[in-house]
Image (tube, rainbow, N blue to C red):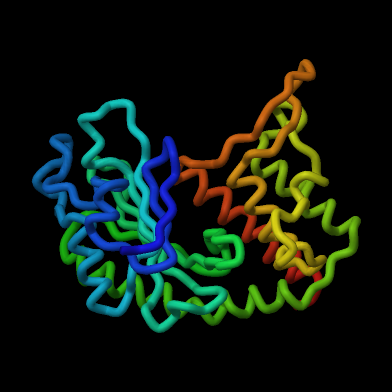
Length: 275
């Protein structure tokens, strides 16, 4: 039995050991959908994500996170957007691991998507890599299984660049002013300035939730910024002095988009600092 963490009000599960099919099915049944949504035509090649997962397991990749979108229309529950995060079995037990992030849907809302991620086990942050690597998109046509497996190895080939970026961030020490600048830019990625002031401050964004993330290096600043903005739970104020507790970014597309934007911001600062 995996030592897993389930999230209330969200269809997702995260584990410190590989997830079984039964554990995944409890929280993300759309991964095991038996057919495509009725809106799909005969040109749509249907392969359940569970078969892709089985193929990736044969290649040595194990799932540690699974989720699916919350839908109001329950007729779409078995077809909706879902995501898996997988690590190669050789990387189990390390402090940080590069991951394959796989997204899909069977209602026409998404092709198969593959991109790189990084998991920091100190805070179990799931960071999604931004512009330093290319996303692989595979439409539901033809040899989907073969192209997904090929896409996985395409993403794996980018991990050297991911590690280079990560190591460069760790080597950079940010001044207090630079940290605040990073937090200010990150807040604008999370909260549209056109909607008014953000409900939380730069200081709150930079506040570490554990000692291991308290360093002034860019990697630590990035990690705690990502966690504070994506997980929420911070007390702030909305216009009119109304107290407000920030919400976590639970929607799959919004979470991935914010993660990638934050990575791009951090990687851009790395490059400006000459690493």
